[in-house]
Image 1 (tube, helix red, strand yellow):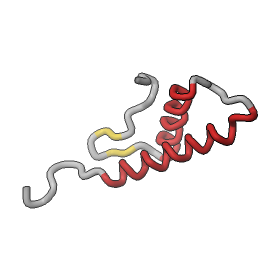
Image 2 (spheres, helix red, strand yellow):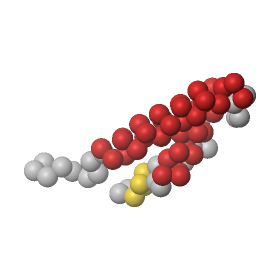
Image 3 (cartoon, rainbow, N blue to C red):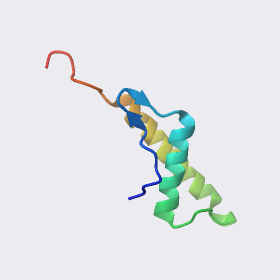
Length: 71
């Protein structure tokens, strides 16, 4: 979808908070069609970035890397 979004996990290494937020911003830009929102859309644009970043951190924090014990 968006080749400029950086992969946020490489093996067991996870992206920094800034990298997660920038990827979220790139995603919202792509979805909305705006590289920079107009003044009346800034709040909704930033809320979307916040939500995507939060969801991304939750996903990264919940991933099990490698095989779970006992399998």
